Image 1 (cartoon, rainbow, N blue to C red):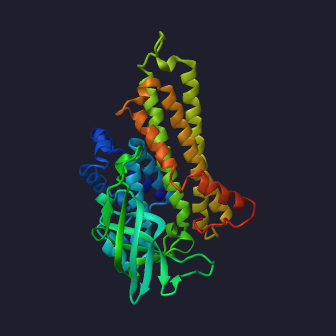
Image 2: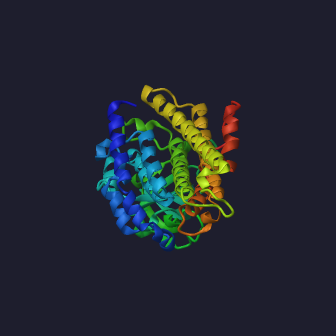
Image 3: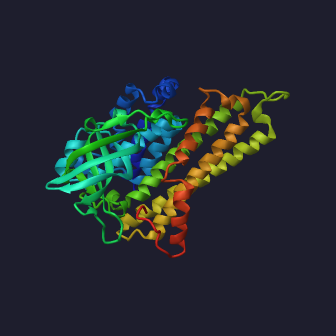
Length: 394
């Protein structure tokens, strides 16, 4: 990473850190409202953290992946839902580099745009002159209540049925449309990441112009911008984003346990928790877990970025290692949080306790398909054996 990139990363990381007092003052209401408060959303937008991956042609910083993830890690340390609700629209900002200049300007030109949605292709896009008639219901519309724009991933249909691509899989199309055109179903009643407001949403027979759609061959849209960021496969950055939220939550749990252990005297003991051997061992284990998972992820994604800068092909092997590192980083974060939660004893149980929220949030993040065990280890192992991954989502 060159000096200019380092300076830019520091600027945005400091902007994220400056939000902590506001996050702390509002955090008690997150679970109750199941949303982030407007004041915090506006503060994140004012800090321009939703636009970190916008192309320079649109006035964005087009931040490299590692400095971007450091910002997300910091926000996730402050609160898991804050990190999650920032990384979704900020991550989708890279789609501006796959749209025409006119459409990208319409959506992202303000620098405050919030585009959300899911990549799960549960929609149907019927090809018609000039575009598509879109019908579908999508789950996990994180942050949708605060968004202006929504995307829905669809299987393209012709009159004869689903359109099959050269690889034998159904052709997919990301369709972008105003949030006002979608019906939001308020069904986000969950344990972890409660303040992300990740409700379902749906449209019926909505016309979407061709230029407001993005083809998703191999889940990586062809770029319309020259920046290096848009040469990195979208699945590689996507899984890294989700894993980094878990890493930030893991750091928060360690900080919370250290704070509790300074004053908590376990029942039947004459000394505070931090003087207990088992607490010291658990803290050391958690620190090692979190740092090792983070190092693996940042190292592999950094190598992927180096390949892009050098104009080298980003191979399946490289992609597999990034995905493996994202999975491992998430597992390390979960294990670190579990250690801290158990070490906190009865204090960890109470709502409002930071460890209680970290425990719920990190396990919720670990369920995401981008980092879940059942959806990752088999295709990764296939590639490491020299086979194809067996899925287009790679």
